[in-house]
Amino acid sequence: MTTAPRIVGVCVLLLGVCATVSHGHYLDSFYCGQDNCYELLGVSRESTKQEIAKSYRQLARKFHPDLHHGAEQKQAAEESFKKIATAYEVLKDEESRNDYNYLLDNPQAYYAHFYRYYRRKAKIDVRLVIVVTISIISCIQYVTRWQRYDTAIKYFMSLPKYRNKAMEIINQTGSNGTAGSSGKQGRNKLSKAEQRKEHDEQIRKVIENNMDIQGAYAKPEIKDILWIQIFLLPFTIGRYLWWAGRWVWKFSLLKQPYGREEQLYLIRRYMRLTEVQFHAIEPDTVEQFLRHQLWIRENFDHWKAEQENEKKKQMADNPRYKAYRRYMKNHGPGRLTFEE
Image 1 (cartoon, rainbow, N blue to C red):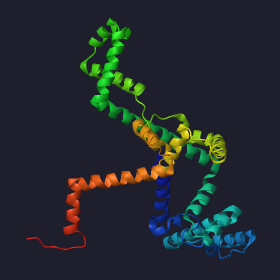
Image 2: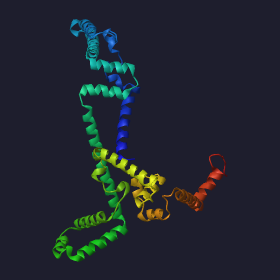
Image 3: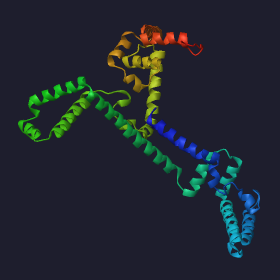
Image 4: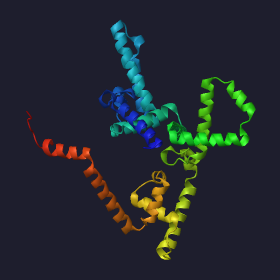
C-alpha cells in the first residue's frame, strides 16, 4: 500500500474512533448535547427569531442565579441558565440553526456534523485545510520514499558481492591518481572508527552511482510527490489522451507492428502489474518475455499455463509439500483420529 492511501486510512480510522466514543454519542459535546435546543427554550422549529429571543429573555429572568437563594437552588438555576444560554446561542444564528436542524434530520451523518460544527467554530477555509492536508501527505510521502531507498542501499552494502565490487571500483579510482599521498597521510591520522565510517561512505557512494534500483525502493524524485502530480495532472491527462489516440490510429486502424515499448506495455497489462512492479523485474527476465513474444495473447496464455504447471510440479516434488499433503489426507480438518 502506498503512503497516501495509508494516511487516508489513518484519518478515517481516527474519525471512526471519534464517531464511536461513548457508544456513538460523540456529538453530545456539540450544540445542546443530549437535550433538544428547541425544547429547552420552549419553541418549535417553525418559531421566528423574534419568538426565540422573547422566550430566551423570559427564561433567563426566571433561571438567573442571582434571583435564587440557597446553595442547591442557586446551583440548579445556574445549570438551567447555562443550558438556556447555549440553546439560544445555537438558535439565534441562522447558519448555526441550519446546521442544528441538519443534525436533527440526519443524526447518522457523524462526519458531516463534525465538519459543519468545527468549520463554523474555527472559521477555517476548506481550501486551506485541503492545501495543508496535501502538503502533509506530500512531505510524509517524500520522507518515506527516502527511507525505503536508504534501506535498499544499506541492504546492498551488506552483501559481499556488491561490497567487493564497490571496493574494486574504489581501488581502481585510487590507482588512477584521484587519491593522492596527502590523502593517505590524512586518512592514517583518523581513528579506526572514523576510517571505517569514511570507508562505508565511499562504498555507499559507489553503489548509489552504479546501482539501478527500480520499483518501490527506487530513488525518490520530486515528480512522484502528490503536490507535483496534482500540478501536472492536466499534462498527464493530455499525454494519456494523445497516447490512446496514437495507439488506436497506429495499431487498431493502420495495423502497424508493435514496437518494444508497446510490447512491454501489453505484457505488463496481461500480467496485471503496475509500472513500478514491472520495472522491478530483472532485465534478463524481461528479455525472456520478449523472446517468447508474450505480447501476443495466445503466447501469453500458453506461457502462463506452463508456468502454473511448472509451479505445481515443483510443489509436488517438494518434500515439505508432500508431508503437508499427507498430513491433510490423514489428519485433515475433516477427520478426527486418536493415535496411541
